[in-house]
Image (cartoon, rainbow, N blue to C red; front, top):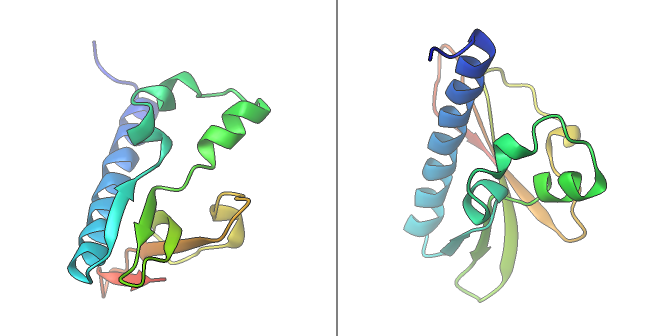
Length: 119
């Protein structure tokens, strides 16, 4: 069965997001950090499809889970949320609402420079 254009776009964006997560994970690992997957896609595989269109408080909490927990070389622990955008526009609304501190690693695609990393 063929995918609809909307389903194809969803999967394409999911792939881009996973590539961005892998880049950030490898960056932190190369800097000596411990990196732990934490996001909903990794904690409960398949839940992304189950939560489509659901706007309950529990669904919002699950969606707000950051992608990683990282530990630096001084044993400090942080949440990290990775965002990929084809355009360079980011806002605080792109970040999940968390009860603790969350750092955002943002990758954006630029036609002239395709590997910008902001954090």
